Image 1 (tube, rainbow, N blue to C red):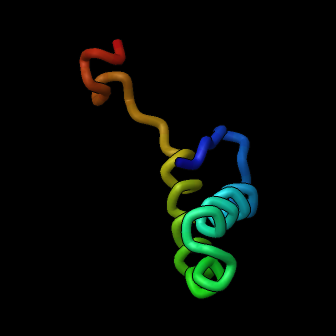
Image 2 (spheres, rainbow, N blue to C red; image 1 turned 90 degrees about the vertical axis):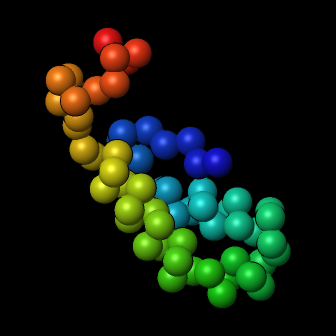
Length: 62
């Protein structure tokens, strides 16, 4: 699992995702997944930038 901080860049997220892919599936497969890793990193970063209105949060967060 990727441990993200709001200040992480897309590149930092991609590096962590690629490192995890290498650990799980090896260097060759991680290279084959490079486009998916980059896309996933961008999507995770986009998601991390969103702020949920307090009224929309589930009750257990309040």
